[in-house]
Image (cartoon, rainbow, N blue to C red):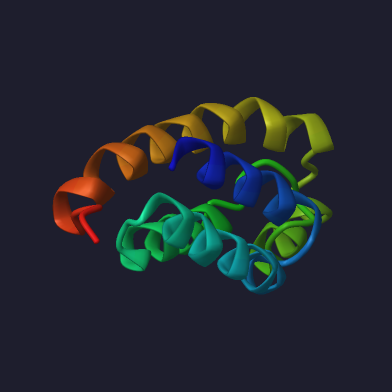
Length: 104
């Protein structure tokens, strides 16, 4: 689940979160089927990963809206977004299997 989350986050950093979810959802469902696990936790991890667009101003519309007028630099997003992304990732891969069990 952690690898799925972080691959989705990386894709979401360069394309929109909707596109990242569309790209990663079939992969997540195939992974769940391959592991003989429920598809729901894998899908939820993709949703959270796609929504964690904190690393770049490109990944989410609001980031791009404040980028210029706020006087931010690209590195500001990386400096503040990386710890936040790691926190969200840790919480996601910890809590998702509890709320949505992996058992198929």
